[in-house]
Each structure stands twice: as C-alpha cells, then as structure tokens.
Image (cartoon, rainbow, N blue to C red; front, side, top):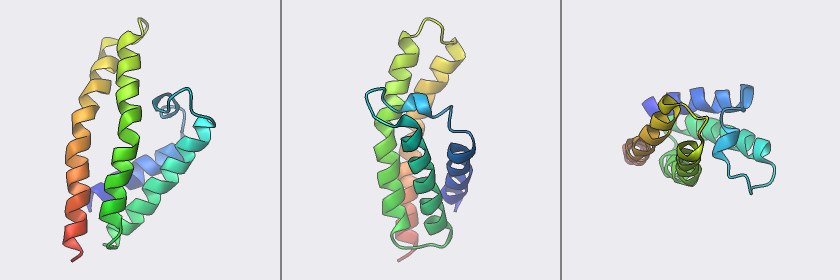
Length: 115
C-alpha cells in the first residue's frame, strides 16, 4: 500500500509539474515532456493496481521502476559533471539510486500479497 501512495504522489507530480523530471530523460530521446507525462500516467495506473491489490500491479510496478532507473543513473552522472550543480543536488541524485532497490522489492512483495 505504501508504494501505491508513493506512486499516487509522484505520478500526480509528473502530470502537474513535469519540469523536474525532464532532465531524467536522456537528451537523445524524442518528446521528453511526453515521456514524463506517460511515465506519470503509468505510475498512476500502477498506484491504482497496488491500492486495489490487482495481481498485475506488483510486477508492473517493478518493471516501471527498472525502466526509469537508467534515467536516474544518467541524471546522477550528469549532475556530477555539471559545475553549476550544488553539492546537495549531486548527493541527492546519487542517494536516490540505492532507494530504487527497496521500492522494487516492495513492488514484488505487493505481487506476492495478492496470491
């Protein structure tokens, strides 16, 4: 349930204030704003599934978290190379990477809870 709430919050923020997430999408990708919006919708769909304990929601949420992980790594690397980036932002960018693992674990546990 906790991951469902996290996805409600982050999915909503992707839709109402997408600008913080655009830098997480590799610059070579087309339609970066659209990708952020689609990922927000995907988070909201996963949230609905997690909160209603749908059997597909755990695996779908884990896949979504895995799919966005490379963007998070790229953002951390880019922030580290940016001389204008604050030390706090760089530290936060790197600190969020290991946080993906417990989120993926929680998603997989949610799938087990529906059996």
